[in-house]
Image (tube, rainbow, N blue to C red; front, side, top):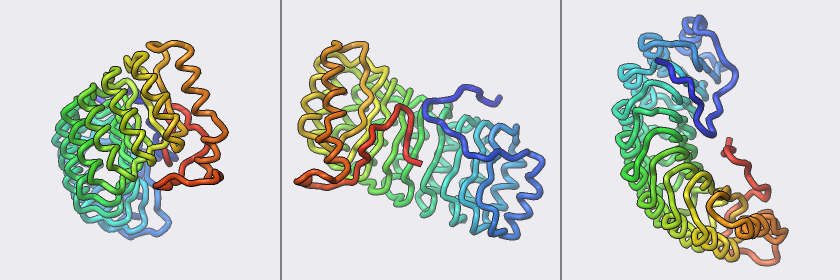
Length: 318
């Protein structure tokens, strides 16, 4: 059945189209209509044959940029057709398959296509509860060679520390991904520690969501220590994790030396009010804003453009 829950940070493509428009859209794709740039059939109860037909037609288009198929019945046969289209289709830059029926094997097929695809920049797979570690590991392998994907949403996909560790290790080699959403996964401290190792060498990731990810103080301290070295990551979400005073203190010390981080969502429940306020004060320091805006008198060793305005929970790069 079609999923109805909406994972954190999921924003569907606009505008929506009626399922009855598929034959006309297929015709326009096959004719390579240069005005057809966005197709969004979110929550239209599409089935395998209809999605396969769309996927086959994609191969004839050099203009389509965004394809939205969220909240539909994307079974394995349809996923294979989309994967084949990604191998051949050079213009699609944004694909949304969130809240569909895709399982780990289907995501694995997409991941294999990403090894060859050089145009897709944004992939939305939020809420694929059957994907799990199988999908995460396959995507991690793709990220080791892919040079175009910049935004990947894997929120609420039942990833454990196994998949998280694979993704983190891929970040040690990947030079394209700037935004990774792992909200509401079972990453744990083992996964967090592997991400900490990756952040010590990664120079492209600017936005990371690890909220509600089963991380405790141990994982938080590892992340904070890594961020004394990393000056690229500007926004980190750690909300709804069980991080206690020691973890909060580690982030205070990190913020004193890392002036490039301007967005930090930190769990308040397990730390003192005084420590929570100290974190907020450090984040809103005018000197930090000057660093972020490039207006400080001196520059960091590795200057990375950073937004001065603190990101709100759930926002990611468009």
